[in-house]
Image 1 (cartoon, rainbow, N blue to C red):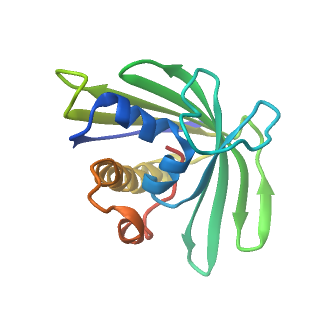
Image 2 (tube, one colour):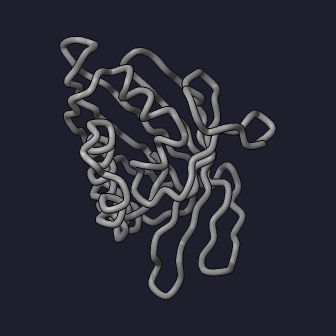
Length: 193
């Protein structure tokens, strides 16, 4: 087992409640996470639920996050299942497992023990009305990953995390992050956040 930790933060001029909504509502998550193709609330059986409104905001809620990125000659796509492990006024912890990987047209199945990621958000501010510092850490554990690959992954994913948090700020503050902002992040590593 090899693991690596990445972290980044951003100041957002929005209240904590609004930011928590951006971190937990699948439709909104898909707008700011670099490489996200879709985010969808699922029930415990794995069936999709409506992705609008304040779903994904309770302990145990599940989200399926599908991300993709260019991979040389082929496109790499991953599907993650994330569960809210802790949620409070200023803290969110989500644990992801890799469900499925695809490189080009070849699909690869992954076991639950092969990949685990714990993403923690801390929303710090003097008042609940903001501005809020959003701090994110992601601890990733991958079975069989070499030390060199973990180091390279951490470096690449840290850049992507910073861009995702910038995109979160732009979207939450109505700065027009949208498709142009997503295009600027298209060469970065897609990851579960």
